[in-house]
Image 1 (cartoon, rainbow, N blue to C red):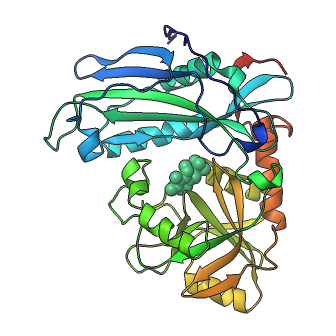
Image 2: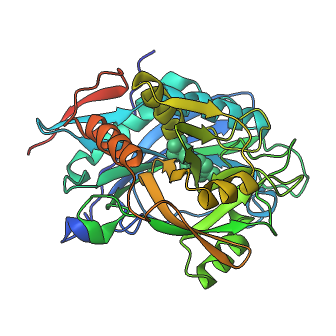
Length: 366
Ligand SMILES: Cc1ncc(COP(=O)(O)O)c(C=O)c1O
């Protein structure tokens, strides 16, 4: 199906960020956004591109009280020849469908989602940064805004997409990667079986803030979550999936508990490792096994994977008041190779031998 969305261009274009090496994460937003409504009986309708600006919301809207919402996260990149591409959008569409089902949010057809992403990027394509480590972050989200205090799925929703030129996660490092310190959280939990851990919903993140704030007291960047039932098995690192290289095996938590967000970067890492002949296992891994591996010298690397940082290597774990050094605390070879390959494919500087990039048919000046 072909979609045409009317565009209302802003009368007040924003000043562009002066220094692309100091963009930070979601500190700047582009000039336009996508908005579409859903009404029961009518379905999704009236998709449009409008200026990015504050909008009115009725204080009794159900999202403000019962958090019926979802979001996605992806990035657009400008390749060296000026064409614009995104990464594995079919995976975002599939994850969105699972989240919507879990949250009783109406289905949004994948081709409509993709057409909306393309339309809003086209409106602001010249905002895509090109400095090393940068990209245009895409934040699609849906919320129920029916005026109702009944704890029931809304009959009216809004789907919006906003865009933010974002910087290298490792701003001090000119786009490269560097190790961070992570706090092993065995007090608070993120998600339990039967909950919403596998879905991308705001409540998962609001509920995690206490833990990540506490981690910062220990000079840690984020938390390593343990499972809710036994506080024993590793699950995720902050808003990323977690990988552990012990001897010649790279291990990541399995998804079958439904407590872990199925990351698109996680899936890509597993596929690349398999292609390179590295032994990779999706299996339960206890924090005790990691402590033991660090003691006997087989803990080689820990890294997190996610859209924001791509690959984020971990140099130290803070667990039970003790600091565990990961190998020599430097970026490990697998993490570095994964980062170079993934970010290279995403930005068009490494050949896309996996068929993961999705050109939007938009070209911007170099
Ligand atoms: C809780 C959580 N886990 C993992 C990820 C990584 O997912 P992806 O690789 O799709 O960005 C994210 C980020 O979206 C996340 O918020």
